[in-house]
Length: 106
Length: 156
Length: 242
Image (cartoon, rainbow over all chains, first blue to last red; front, side, top):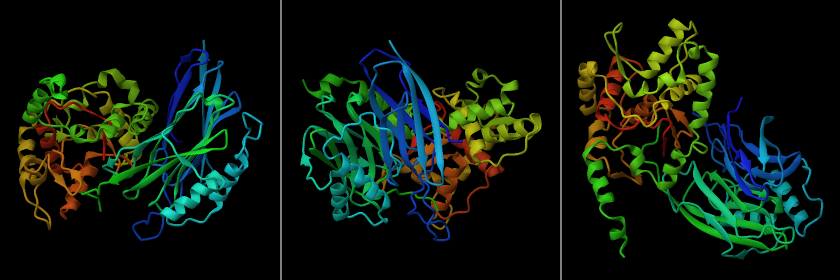
C-alpha cells in the first residue's frame, strides 16, 4: 500500500487560508523509458488527485508523466467550518489511494 | 474522465472549453513536445483564447537545476479569490518533454488563495509556461527558462 | 550598507571552519534541494522512514528495541562485531537481528523493506555526529588502501575525485567529498531511496571497475573508512541528493 505524508494544520481560525501539503509514494513510470532490453516500460502514473471537504470537491489536479516520482502537491483552502478532508489519488492500472484528515476550525 | 461533483453549480465563462480541453488532452496520442505542441496544448486549455503575459501570475522554479527528475515549482496568482473574481484553474506546460502537459489544477473562491506547488520532470533545458484561467474568462501567462545541468555520474 | 558588512565575518568563519573538516554533500546542493531535505513534509525519503516505522512495529523489532533507544546507534556504525572479529554495518546488524533473534526470513540488502528499516533506524540518529568505532582501525586502514587504489578501465581511485578534485565540477555536477552520512538517501537520479552500497556500485561501474560485493569484507572495510573520514559530520538520514 502506498505511504502518504499529509500536512493539514491541526486547527484553523474561521476564514483563515490554510495550506495543505501532500506527498504519496508512487513510481510515476512515464511510459517513455526503455527497460534494460530496450522495450518501453508501461506507463504507470497517478492521473488525478482530488480533495473533498465534507463531500464537496474543493481541489482537483490532473497529473501527467512530467510529474516527478512520489508526487508532491500543495494547495490552499479557506477554512470556514470543522469537517473532514478526503484525499484521493487515482491512476493507471486501477491505482486508487484514499486518506482522510479532520480539520478543526475555531 | 468522470465528472466530479462541483462545489459550485453555475457555468462560469469558458468552463466548457476548459473541461473539453482536459478531455481532449486525455485522449490525445503521445507526441514529442515542441513549442508548437505546447502552443496547441495551451490553446486546448484556454479554448482558443490567447493568454496575456501578466505580472499577476508568478512561476517560481529554479533557473538552474542539478537533476531534471525532481524540479520544485510553485505557481501563484494574485487574486482576491471571491465569488466575483477568482482563479478557476492553473496549468503548467513545457516545450521539450515527450508531452507538453505537466499539471492542470482546478480551484475556486473556496481556495482562499491561488497557489499550487509540485515537482516536475524536465527532460532538458527549456522554457516552461504557466497559465491561469480567471473567472472573468481571461487567461494569464507567465514563463520561465530552466537550465538542466547534465548529470555527470550516471549509473549503468 | 554593503551586504558584506551586514553579514559580517560569520560566513567567512564558517567557510574557514568548513574547509578544515569534512564537508557534507548537503553544503554544495542548491537551496531548493537543501529545502527539500530539511522539510519533513516534503522530503520523499520520509516515506521510507514511515514505512520502516510500521515494519519495526509489525516485524517484532519493537518488542526488544524502543525507538528512542536507537538514537545514536547509526552514528556508531559500522561497529566491531566480536563474533565476526571484524566490522558489521547497520544493514548487516539489522539483517542478523531479524533472522537470528526475531526468526524472520532474510531480506535482501537492497529490498524496499530492508531500506525502510534501515532508514527508520538511521533517522533516529539524525543530527548526531558520526563517531567511528575505535576497534575498527585495521578495517579502516584496509578501506583507505581501497580508497586510494586506482581501479577500472578509467584507472581512477576514489581519492582522485572525492579528495583531490572534491569541490570542483565534473561536467555540470558538483564533485562532493563522498561522505556516507545521509544514507539511506533519496537520490533524484534514482527517483528512489537507496543504500550506500548502491551508490558505491554506481561509482565503481562509473570508472568501469568490478563493484565490491555488498557485505563482503572489502565492502565493509571501505564503508568503515568512509565513516572514519566523515567523523563528526551529522547523520542526515534520509538525505536528499541530486
